[in-house]
Length: 277
Figure 1 (cartoon, helix red, strand yellow):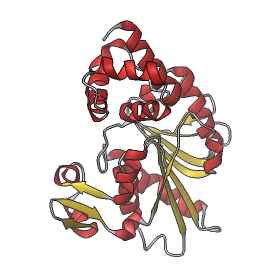
Figure 2: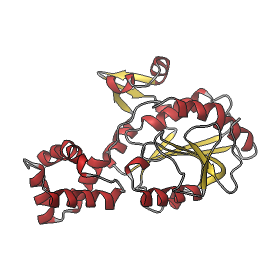
Figure 3: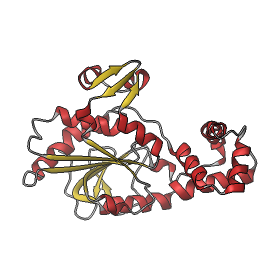
Figure 4: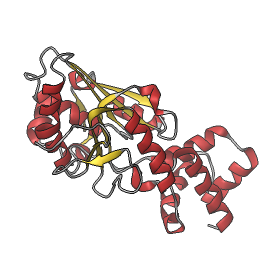
């Protein structure tokens, strides 16, 4: 791929999603976009770029962005964040929200749905403690394709074997041929919407907990700062923001601070009262 073609694609993807593509990621462009080219009756990535130059087709731009922003995910990924949510964050919120009995959780960049469904199953297992509560889980992604898969809640044998405890598979999934579908009661707990993290995030409302894991690593610091500052503004004073293990707010967003003792968890710096229990 020549430099001009690479720059055109990388600029398009950054402008539309915030994703930074460096020249050592050309292999990623090829693996993600050559199948897209072939679906359009084109033979090579160069043909795809040529089509984009000729037509400036909005649908093609959207398809390229979706192909490049689909990230790997699996059930209960890394385990520890879910343990922290269950053992530290949820007990605090149950006590602090006793009066209004509402809990709002946002899973940003949810991909094909394994992470928000993991949270839903975890909360379902805690149903006795949440009796009489209104719990909302909003899951968003930039890609229509992954959102449709997430809404269906239909996963392959390989996908349910990655991170999902066997007892939860038996309890909350039904086998459908070679696939497994998550129970309708779990699907009903999650609302899926299309959302670009570069947009105005205020429209999704305020949240007690935000999961935005393994997303910011693909952004430059300026974009990270913009996204984190918006998340701070919609996070409750004692709310929790979960980031990925390689991500941090330090030096990027002064409005958030790490929660002592809880790796990967952040809370508003000024008024945050959340502390490790």
